Length: 183
Image (cartoon, rainbow, N blue to C red; front, top):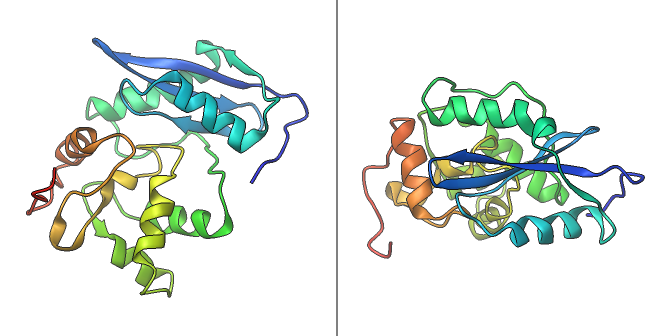
């Protein structure tokens, strides 16, 4: 789903924590549009931006522009914030946006399964499609795909990696009871 922003750039910067960093990106029109995972290659963000906004999109290193979003993420990572107040946009298909909206209703400290999300959408047989949509969430942490677990609470795929997913769930006090042996 590509929509040009009439030459408007995507501003980006890094949120750094010790020796790790992640990309945070925003547009003036939409707010926060991308949160990467720790130490994700910058090219992953660049590819996502071109797919989502078109090949001519301008990517501007502008840490000051993304600072309000990075500040809220820092507060979350240090346990000082449970919800986000800055506006954000989720670009995707209608089905992806429906999945992300349902996923975003899961409160801090709670988890739900892929099957729970599929059932909430009235499509109980769509667990795999739900998983694929969740895997394409461009705004990690803020749109809380880390709160989606497998049946029985097993940790399953996460764009940021299972280590990051486990850390986020531990931060929220919601680590699932059972962990997949395939980790």
